[in-house]
Image 1: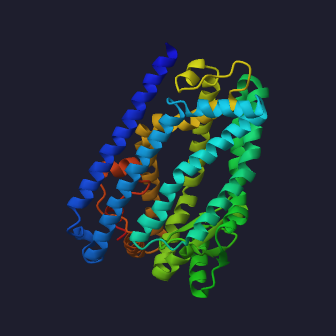
Image 2: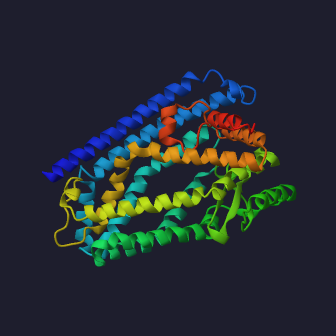
Image 3: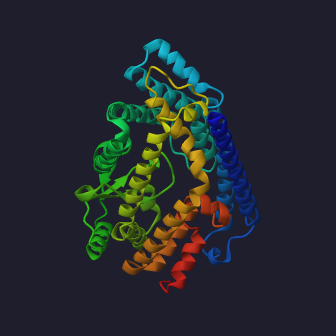
Length: 421
C-alpha cells in the first residue's frame, strides 16, 4: 500500500514537472516571437534589428530543443524506475558479480555509462546542429570526442574513490552514515575548488598569462581598489570550442585566479572589461560565493539526512520499480534512485534559487558601478547579450524559473534607477 502510494506521489510530481516545463516553454516561445519584430526602445540605438531577431530565433530554437530533451529525460527516468530498467540492470549485475561492493560499484558505473550514451545524441545535436546553425560552434568532432573521453576518465579517477568511500560509510558507520558522508563530500568540494583551476581545467583548455600590459595595469588597479588578491590573470582559449564569451574567477583562498575568454577580450574595450570584472569581483567582496557554498552545504546535509531515512524504507524502492535486496547491500541503489527522482520533486521550487541569484546579480552590478564606470558596464552588457544572442525579451515567468541572471533591460533599469548611469 505504501509503495503504491509513493508511486502515485512520484507520478504526480513527474507529470507536474513535465506540465510546468511545457507551459513555461510555450509561454517563453510565444513572448519572444511576439517581440521579435522590434528592438526594445531602450536598446534600439545599440542593438541592430538583425541581431535582435537572431537572438529571438536562437532562444526559440534552444527552448524547443530543451523541451524535447526534457521529454526524453522524462522517458528515460520512467524507463529506469517504474518500467523496471534499474531492476533489470541490478539483476544482471548480481548474476555477474554477486552481492557486495563490486556489484554496487558496477551498478553505478553501468548506470552512468548507459545514461551518458542515451544523452549522447542530444549532446551532439546541441553542439553540431543548434550551435552550428547560429554560428557559435567552433569545435570539430574530434575535439568533441576527445572532451567526452577525457571528461569520463577524469570523472572516473575522481568519482570512483569518492563513491567507494561513501558506500563504505553507508555500510559500516550506522544510522549517522549520512553525517560522515556529508563531511567527506564537503571536504571533497573544497578540495576541488583548490585543484580545479590549476589541475583539472588545464586538461581541457589552454590558459596563458594576460599579455596586454595596459589592460593588465588597469585590472590590477581595480583589484587594488577593491582589495582582491589573485594568483594571476589568464586568458582561456574558449574560441576553439565556442564563439560565446565570458570572464570568471575560480579557486579558493590563495589559489584564486581571474580568467578571461579570448572571445571576450576580442570584443570588449579595456574599460568595458574592467567593468565586467568589477561585477565578478563584486560577487567575491559581497561574500556571495561564501553564501552560496553555505547554502549548498546546508541543502546537501538535509538531502543526505533524508536519504539516510529513505534508504531504510522498503516502499522507497518498490514505489520506484525496484525490489530491495534482502540479503545484500542496497546502498548504491538508494543513491541512484535518490539522484534520479530528486529533481522531479524540487523543480517547482526553482524560482527560490533564481530569486536569490538575481538579487546577488543586482548587488554585483551596484558594486561594479561603484568601482568602475557604470556606462561601461551597460555597454559591455549590451555587447555580451548581442554576441551571445541572449534575448532581450524573455517571458518573465519563464525567466523567474530558469534564469540566474536578470534580463538585460531589468539590469540596465536598476543601474539607471540607482543614478549610476
